[in-house]
Image (cartoon, rainbow, N blue to C red; front, side, top):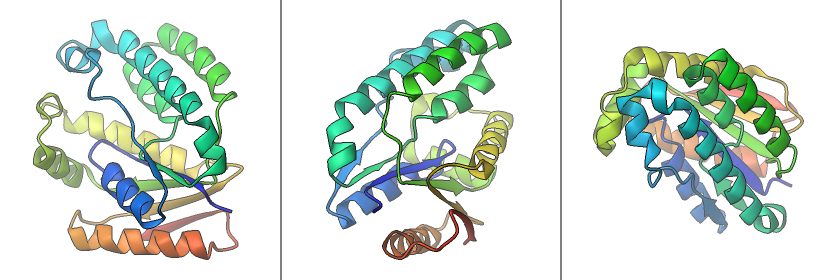
Length: 207
């Protein structure tokens, strides 16, 4: 039975909107990533070298704490989250130097072994231009300075993550545009997958 679902994707991919819509449709709980209150985030965008490690480590601990607080609901109820704990590694790989990343990865692996894994992981993939359009539209000031190269590298890391073999189901939606009609189709395809999952453990759908 699929009761714990994680929606993942790059910055501006549309994760939260889909996760909230799906949670409401399934009459379940929405588990949001809590990041906007982190005071280190705008500092990181201004000076990534100085603030990368404290930012990524604070996110790691915050996400772990949230996962443990939700543990009972993750096991016993329907939950849709707009992030997957493993994303800590994706951003750390991109933002940290090698020595810091080694320390970070060891701590991540120790914490990851203690949390509940989803039954379904959903990746939303779209191009950099579409990501930038969505980022501009939602208007978070500190995100407006994100460079194309940064989003492109994150896209590459997410693509790698989507291709990895996992002990649970994975579905990847590749969006050619960011029109609302595409997200509506994604939502209905995802609902169909949840109720009648195919035999394959990992599939990719182009919209």
